[in-house]
Image (cartoon, rainbow, N blue to C red; front, side, top):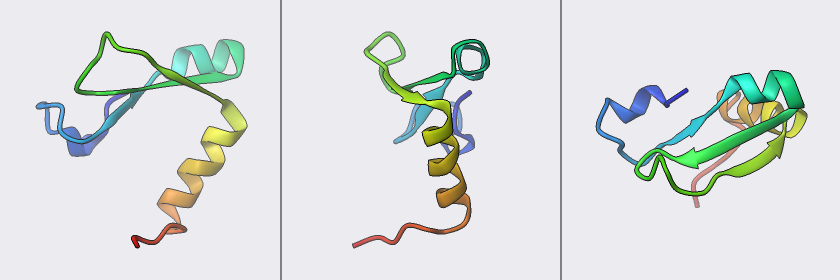
Length: 62
């Protein structure tokens, strides 16, 4: 899935794939500007915690 902030042009966003997460418990994440480039793999629980923190405004810009 691509971030809604990408607006179709890649932007400064990431993509993640929900299907592998549901099958293996690992969430692959990659830079939307390089869709054929490498992906980072996160445990599904850790990715879920990260997303909850983002949605809950748990991070501040420095």
